[in-house]
Image (cartoon, rainbow, N blue to C red):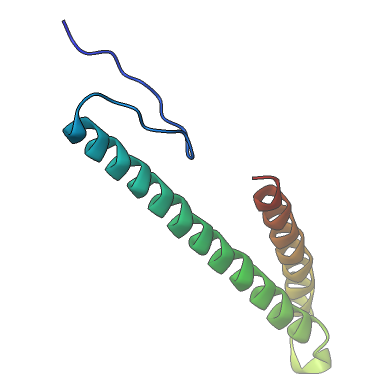
Length: 96
C-alpha cells in the first residue's frame, strides 16, 4: 500500500511527524517558489521585449519614404500587436 499524498500550498504550515519528511516538503516548497520567481522574471523579460519591439516598429512605421510602404505597414501592425500583447501579459500577471 502506498502512502497518501498531501498538497501543501505556499504559506501553509508543514506539520509532520518526521524531520526528513519536513525537510523534503520544505525543499519542495522552496523549489516551487524559486520556479515561480524565475517564471515571473522570464515573463517580465518577454513583456519588456514586446515593448521594445513596439518602439522599433513605431519608428519604422513613421520612418517615411526611407522604408518601403509594405514594411511600414507591417511595422505599424506589429507595433499595435506588440503593445496589446504586452498589456495583456501585464493584466494577467497583475491578477496573480
